[in-house]
Amino acid sequence: MLPFLSLLLLVLFNFLSVSFSQSEFPKGLLIDCGATTKSKIDGRKWLPDAGFVAGGTPRNLTTPVLVPFLSTVRSFPLRNNLLKKFCYVVPVYRQAKYLIRTTYFYGGVNGRDSPPAFDQMVDGTFWSVVNTTEDYANGMSSYYEGVFVAQGKTMSVCIGANTYTDSDPFISALEFLIVADSLYNSTDFGKFGLRLVARHAFGHSGPIIRYPDDPFDRFWEPLGGISSTVAGNRNVSVSSLWNVPPLKIFETALTTNGIQPIEWNWPPVSLRNSRYYIALYFADARNWSSRVFDITINNISYYRNLNVTPAGACVFATQWLLAGPTKITLTPPSGSDIGPLINAGEVFELLVLRGRTATRDAIALNDVKHSLTNPPLDWNGDPCLPSQYSWTGITCSEGPQIRVITLNLTSMGLSGSLSPGIANMTALTDIWLGNNSLTGPIPDLSSLKRLQTLDLGDNQFSGEIPSSLGNINSLRELFLQNNNLTGLVPNNLNGKSGLNLRISPGNNFATPAPS
Image (cartoon, rainbow, N blue to C red; front, side):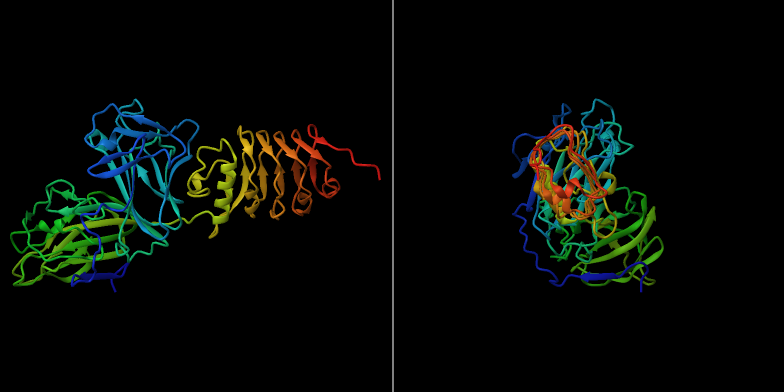
């Protein structure tokens, strides 16, 4: 048994039949952030982003760009928005697997020489820090890729400012691309997402390999700087693997003139202590003798006696523990007549999914949001998660089921009405909505059996006080002063033991008829 993981070898003998035609565009949504009109780039339709995001400001860059969708960004205000998130909410197919790619090109939009660093999230899970400083200094954009399965009918990608953010966060483009169910299917996507660390075509020196060579538009970057010869114009018979690598990655390889091992540091970044998905791809154009070698990672056996043929092979690890620099070694056995080779590789960090706010609470909060005319700008994405980026005014429980337990929007300048859907948030213990301009009736809240405090004072609520409030045994504070309420104060509230009831000044209650 190998350490840290179960390790599998996949060899191609029509193992998977791929139905995606390279003449078809990858299925999904391409969002040009900050754009105000649709566009077509290389035959593919890009949408403006206004229909997917509630906050931020579209901005045009003055810096010349090579790719049209880099000419605009959406910028999000940093001032007073520390640890607030701004989310793109995108319709998806439930249980479909998506490659999500975010692209960033600063273009001096904040009037500074260098771009800010900030956070990005998917649904309730922290994805990564976005730091584009090095790429921007070299005149390049930066992109981030991850693979996630849609748990609902929408997914959110959010931008958030942290304590290290020194100017307005921004985003240039957002792509949601559906990939085949077979891709990376040894991962439990109910528990994990995959964050791309590196994807390289070894020996390739041309431009990034992507669509149409890759039917899912993954980016396979060329990897230079390794002192090994390149075997070009390779004629191999690889047709499909369950990760469906593009055939073009097998046209070149890292190999040696002799029979010595190949050893190099890859991926070319120092890794944080975590578990990683690793996939290495091999194919040999020769068919008259075997090319056999061992693979080690950081001197730990990864796979022994790999026999590479024209049919191709992918060796992958689902949860390999790595930290710091990583060294890959391919070693031929004693007496071998040919050295090792490798065509390509991918490394993903496993992201533990942090779950989602309970569906009933998320739906109820969205009902509340839509009943307000000016809800908080960060009320997008998951209400509770990531916990450091929960919605303004929301506190949530911990544990396997995430529930909203308090709602505090006091003095937020809110207008509109209070949705009856708030009564579906049955874990609520406290509601503070005082000192706003809310109108309409007070909804029936009798289902909130844990409610202790209800502060609706200093608003413009009208109608009668629901008598059902008197049936909430846990209620200890009820503040309704300075509204436009009428009718009689229910008897079960007037004399309720242990209740701090505040109904005046303000309001227009009728005087009870003499008994």
